Length: 175
Image (cartoon, rainbow, N blue to C red; front, side):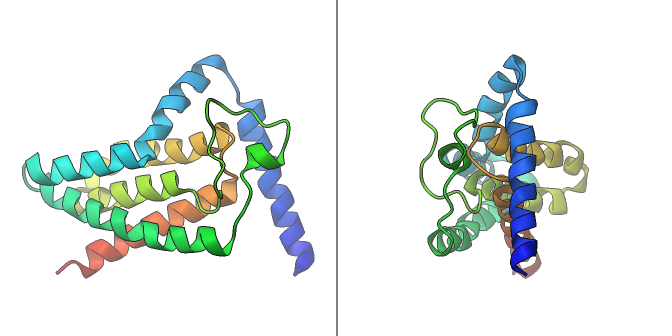
C-alpha cells in the first residue's frame, strides 16, 4: 500500500511539473491568470446570487441550485483542508512557476475547482445544452490551478469530485 501511495505521489508531481513547467507560454499565462478567477469566491457567489434574482426561468432556478451547491460544497472542503494540511506545490517544489501573491494556505482539495464544478454542474444537469460551454470552462479552471503553481492534480481532482457530487446531490434532493 505504501509503495502505491509513493507511486501516486510521484505521478501527481510529474503531471504537475508538466502542466506548470512544460506548458508555460506568455499568452497562456495571461489567459489562465484571469480565467482561474471564474472559480473564485467573488465571481461564483456574485454570479449565482445575481442570476438567481435576475435571470428568467429556468436560469434563475438553476442558479439557485448552484448557489446552494456552492455553499454546501465548501463544508467538506474546509474539513478536508484541516484533516490533510498539504503544502502548496509552489512552497514545496522550488522550481515551480507561480504568479503574484500566491496562496499559502493548504492546497488539498482545490477550493476554486470545487466552486466552479459546484456552480456549473447544476446548470449542466438542468439545462443540458450548456454542457458544451460550461464543462470546458470548469476543466480550464482546474488546469489553471496547476498552471499557476497552486495545486497538484490530485487537489484539482478532489475539488472537482466534491463540487460535482455536491451539485448532483443538490439537484437530486431538491424539494
